[in-house]
Length: 372
Image 1 (cartoon, rainbow, N blue to C red):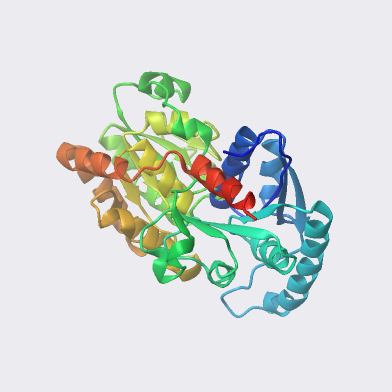
Image 2 (image 1 turned 90 degrees about the vertical axis):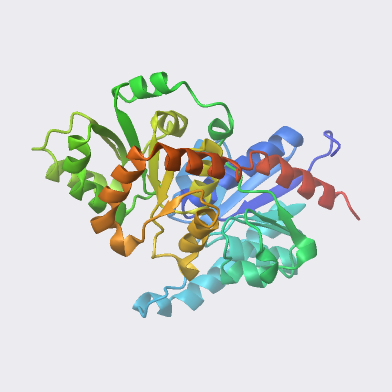
């Protein structure tokens, strides 16, 4: 146990999506709980959502002018070497001036430069790998990391066995706490208590294919007396509202973004989701029947690999992105009517839940930084 009177400094680097930001904040919260006197600085990418979300969580953040290398041929890649070099100089300035005892990388554009510079300066680094298939940056940096915190089995094919700590992914506090009563949650969203409810979440930025698939099947769900709680994402919200304004959507509640996810999860009978690492971790804790539609627009197709880790244990149903518009409606209705299948999925996904990830990560980090 760390001496609570000790003063430690930590940098948490990364972001880009909620899948990186929420685990990072959960780790920071656990650090503050374990070491109240510690100082925490976040480092993100300028212009990305962490620059808004981290201050909302009560932490200071600085931004690097860093971008990712595009997988397709594009003129943007011509600027990549210059942006990378500039971000390395910025990271050097931040790390040298803050003088952290440890740097924790959670993935995202800013994670690489910060962890690389920290390694050069002899500072202990830790990696929190959310996915079942790591990206190239974490593969490279893993050789310098003291410990690598993972959420899936079998990552010893990418990382050294003695560095791996299976913790699961840190999730928001309101997810690990007991969910509100279902009746309360339905009332909160102005939904009926006598109808089955589908929760649709496409990640923090929304998901085009999921939205288009729901829009196509909206009358089909209505015919079966199914109500929808639908998070569209900011980019897609206005278009969906415009296209559906002349339809009877009494039992369809459309939101850009749902902040009260504990309420949303409680209200749901079935959940439709992308297969981002954070979403998977939350869904395992929630334990509801789940249909996963992995995004194809991610590196190494890691969302499909995340989803298959559940599907192979009969803990979720997978619908391919390319088949969602044609198949999703049928799959939803079949699952809604198959109580045995729904119960099996629910029980199996619960067995994969890890609710103490942030504390396990912090305990390991504080143990490591107290070593000589």
